[in-house]
Image 1 (cartoon, one colour):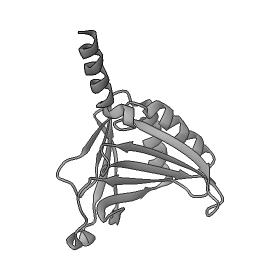
Image 2 (cartoon, rainbow, N blue to C red):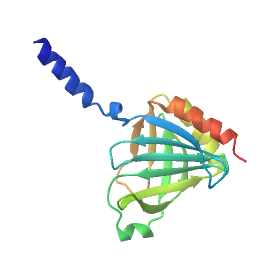
Image 3 (spheres, rainbow, N blue to C red):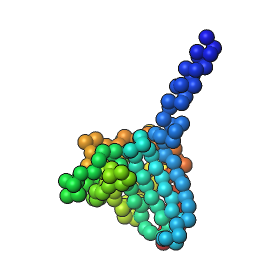
Image 4 (cartoon, rainbow, N blue to C red):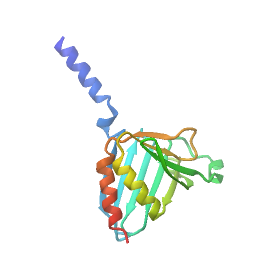
Length: 166
């Protein structure tokens, strides 16, 4: 009986996406020799093909936010100008026009370069999030509704990066 219980617990633990780095915010900082700044990358992976990426570089103002919904890029998407919207803990904080492209193996993505002012508002709310970070990418049929797990630490990394921007 203990063996069966142990095997069930092991199976359950190995099937938990958070263990594989999914469904939580993570941050990584490194020097970028091309921009000459320090680049902080924050990401949230829903699956192998979908997630959200936030990039801050101390050599450039603002943040770049890229949402990858996981479906294939089609030529008709290049004519779309998405309105990306952001909400933290149920409160919409901002919206900004983005652009559409493809990443990886021709997977559709929407991205926007947030202005310095919008970046500051976003990072302040992101670092204080307690429940949910929602991102509407403007190309999907539904928004990304992401848990705030890991957003405090990832938000602190973005705050530090933005403080170093020129």
